[in-house]
Length: 172
Image (cartoon, rainbow, N blue to C red; front, side, top):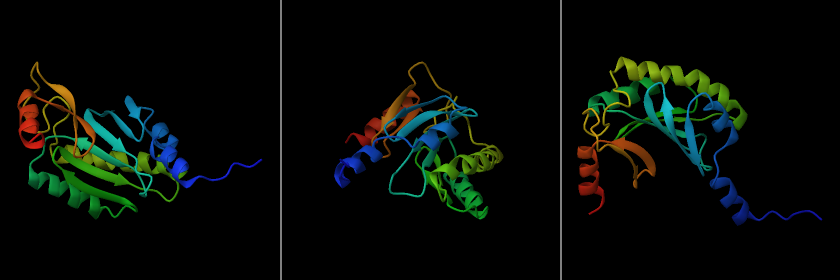
């Protein structure tokens, strides 16, 4: 007897897990995955990955301290590369890049080609790595910890001053 397709059940299952090709592409890096989110470090940068089943590819959030003008410059540089289905964005704690592909299988190759470009641009702009708070730009203190940012549903390591800022601006 054939199983009937249940749109609601099957959609929930696909939404709640990370695509295996994304996991494989990130296998060289230490990443923890929970449902359709991942968190880890790539070449010293704190990175979150979110895989939306309704989009052409995952979004990579690079948490790094950059001025607003440097963030905008990053977006301009990544978008000027005219890479198919690759788009740069800014967000409060750094920059984000959507890396899409025609097929899930093609993502692994695309990621391997796009990641060095992202890292080169970050380095060129002087983006600080994961030893400083992406909110304040100050070296981590003893009270630094990884917190979940409700607006983005991502994890970010913040200093005590960064955490204070988040508590004042997000919990009111």
